[in-house]
Amino acid sequence: MYYCFMYTKDWIKGSLRTILLKLLSENPRMYGYEITRMVERLTDHQIQITEGALYPALHKLESQGLLISEKVPVGRRIRKYYSLTEKGRELATKNVEDYFSFVRTMIMLLSPKTPAI
Amino acid sequence: MYYCFMYTKDWIKGSLRTILLKLLSENPRMYGYEITRMVERLTDHQIQITEGALYPALHKLESQGLLISEKVPVGRRIRKYYSLTEKGRELATKNVEDYFSFVRTMIMLLSPKTPAI
DNA sequence: CAATAATACATAAATATATTATGTATAAAA
DNA sequence: TTTTATACATAATATATTTATGTATTATTG
Image (cartoon, rainbow over all chains, first blue to last red; front, side, top):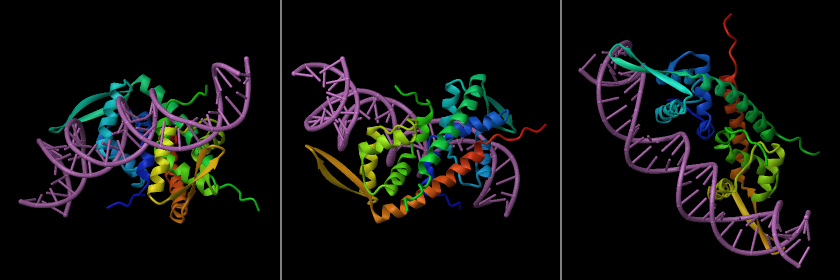
């Protein structure tokens, strides 16, 4: 069993799409299960993507024309690979930049102020 | 009219509680409207807290014993001041620390990888 | 002075999203 | 052979936010 910070779940919400776009901008194609494993590995299990959140998110990105999928048979199973469309690639770049901007703002907001002595 | 990044809203979700706890840990007491103005000012309008999100969030924090409120008449209007309880103060410290930890993880995850040449 | 904007709270309906649980099925490992 | 891992998906539930609406006082501006 992995220990997760209790409040982290709230913070992950809304970051999922950004994570997906980023991973797919660095890899030509990925499938859902692969994404969950990679996020787990890269974040040392600090960020865990549940399937109930992942698959609907991928479907939505595809319906928005940001991703395309192709089903690839592996043995007798079918793997669904996703890759960024041109539109998705453009958004991914901007989205990650904007996220960094947001993070800078949050760090500024949450940084300890020098107490008046 | 202020311009806001389109996707920022998703990211703000879930950070609201952390922002409230932080602001209240730096100010002995604050009221709702004051909080919205301060966040606006500190973030140069990048983060906007809507009333429909703020007041339920404050009520919930109070119901969880993290905040206490006192109603103070100002002229003929009533202002509702909130301040951290001891429990709230402890959580605020830990919550902000955990947030920074989460942010470090996200930065690592979203940082550009050196392309193999 | 009258209209507008700002201050200050609150809640309801609609929307969005995630969690949890469940379902199906193959493949590998113990 | 039983369990774990792989691999997709969705439904019920819970939670949270947006948007809109409501009420009321005070300050500003034309």
